[in-house]
Structure formats: C-alpha cells, structure tokens
Length: 131
Image 1 (cartoon, rainbow, N blue to C red):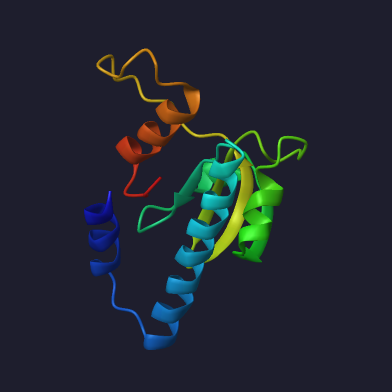
Image 2: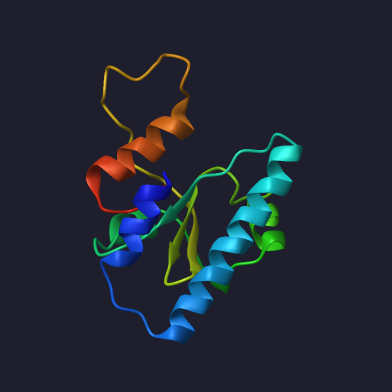
C-alpha cells in the first residue's frame, strides 16, 4: 500500500505548499480512520490521480471541503446520509461524498470480502486512483 502512495506522489511535480497541504490531508485521513477503527466504522476513501473520476463524482454529493478527522467521522457516521458510499479526494480536499464505485469482477477475491472491498478494488482496477 505505501509503495502505491509513494508512486502516486512521484507522478507529479508539486510546489512545497502543495506538498504540505497534501501531508496535512493524509494525516487528517489517517487520524479520522484511526478514530473510526476504534468504533469499528468502515470507510471508503478514493484519492483521485490523473484519471478524472467524473462519472463516480456525478453519483455522489459535492462537498468541496478541506479534510479533517471530524469531517471524515461525520461523513461515515452510520446515521449520515452520505455514509453509504465513497468520498473522492482531489488535491487534498474532499470533493464528493456518497459516491458509487464500480465493483471488481475478479473471481479470485475471497468470498469473505464484502462490497466495500470489491468497490475499492474495482476503482483501482479501472483508474489510477488510490483507494
């Protein structure tokens, strides 16, 4: 996984301010996901890269917000209308939430893997996004 993230950032040249913004965004994602794991709450987070995910974003709700652990927790809170779907992150901001992702057709995936896992694999098979 970490190798994919390293390669993700090597594909572009970033200004120092952009790098710092992305570091803060990733730290916020990690903090939010860590808090959610304590409550066994799942999340589906997709980091858009070169391939634009327009059809995926059209299936969700525009958010256009800086990433904070609290926002991630709020979006994926079980009572939230946006919790059932993925968030799309572009340039360190959550652009859309409640997005529907393509499912993987890979028959070698364990039957124990649920729809969320198949969706994460599906978007990574169909784009250069990191899920």
